[in-house]
Image 1 (tube, helix red, strand yellow):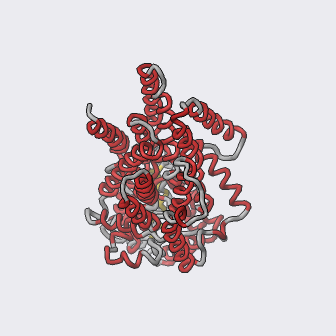
Image 2: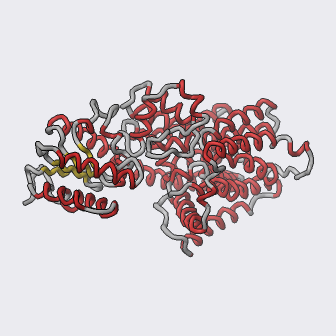
Length: 542
C-alpha cells in the first residue's frame, strides 16, 4: 500500500471506531443540562455572536450568571437548532464528528510531535476515541463544551509543531487564529502557551535564552492569554476563579485527580479518596511506560523525551484547570486524555522498532488490539447507560405532557425522574420546544432539588410557590405523582383518586419548615411511596 493510501486507511480506522461505538447515541433524547441549553439557543440567532464575546453564553437560565465566555459552543447549538430544536440527532452527529476529528488530530500529533510511525500513531488515535472516560463528552449533547475546545487546542498545538518543523510560516498564524477561538470556547485552554514552551524545551531541546529571538514565538500566545484573562477580570472581577482556591479545594482536587487518572487509564468508575491503592496503580502504569521508554535506542531519544512530555507534562497541564472547576466530571479529562493516548502510541512505537521487526510488530499489534477491545467493551457499557437515561428522559417528557392534556387545570404533578436523565432539567423539560405547550401554564410541576434547574434557594421558592398555588385553588385539583425507577426505567403512577393518602402526604409537605427537610420529604414520597406502589402492568399494590 502506498504511503498516501496507508494514511487514508489509518484515518478511516479511527473514524470508523468513533462512529461505530457512538452511533447508538444518534437518536438518544436530551438529558440533564441539555434542556436548558438547547431551549435557550433555539431562541437565539447568530446575530448574538458579538454579544457572546463579552457576556456569559448561558445568560441567567440557571438562576445565576456564570463566568463563562463561550461564543463558539453557543454558535454550534444555534446551528444545530436550524435542523429542529427538538431533534437530538443534529447535536449527536456533531458530537460524534468532533470526537472522530479529535481522534485524527491525536494521530497527527503523535506523528508530528512524538515522531512515532504511522501504525502506532493510528493506535494512539484509536485509543483516544475508545477511552470510556470520554463518553460523557460525546454521548451527552452538552458534553460538547469539552470536545470542541479540545479540538481547537489540539489543532493549534499541531499547527505550531508543524511550523517548528519547517512546514511554513502560515502554520504559525493558523495556530494563533485557532488558539484565539479556543480561548473563547472554554477557559481551560489558557494552558496552551506553557504547553508550547515546555514542548520546545523538552522534546525539541531548544535552549532557553533571555533574548527577543527566543521569546518572539511565544509573545503572541502570551498576549492573547493575557487579553482573555483581563476580559474575564473586567466582566467577573476574577481572572480564573481564584477565590475558590482554599485548602479544602486543594484536598478535593487531589481526590478528583486520583479518580480521574485511574478512570482514564483503567476505564472504571475510579475511586473516591486519595489512597495508597491509587498511588500504586498509577505508579505501576508509569513504571511500565518508563521501562518501555528506557529501551529506546540512543538515536530514538526524541521519543523518550516525547514520552516524558505527553505522559507527564501534558497530563498535568490538562488536569490543572480542574482545580477551579468546582465539581467532579469525567469530561474534564477530555483534553488531558491526549497525553495518555499518545503515550500508548509511543510505547507501541518502541516495540514496533525492535528487532526482529516481524515478531515485534506482531506482539505490538496483539497488545494494541487487546487494549482497544478492552476499552471498547467498557465504552459500550457506558454508552448504553447514557442511552437508558435518554430513554427515561423521553418517556418522562411524553408522559408529563400527556398528563397536562388530560388532567384538570391546576393539577399538582410531582415528577420523580432519575438525576442521570433530568438533573437541572425542570422546568425547561416541560416547556416548549420540548412540549407543544407550556405544561406549567396548566399544572404545577415540582421535583426534588437534583432535577431542578437552579440552586437550592430558588428550588425552595419555586416548590413552595407551586404547593401553595395548588392548595389555594377552590376547585381542589388532583395530585399526580410519577416515579421512574433508575435501574429498570419502569414508571410508577399514583393519583389521589387511586389513593387518597397521597393528598394527605402532599398537605404535609405544606407544613414542612426548612429547605433540606422539604427536599428529603419530596424524595421519600417519590421513591419510598410512589416507587413502591406500582410494580408491573399498572396494578396497584394495596
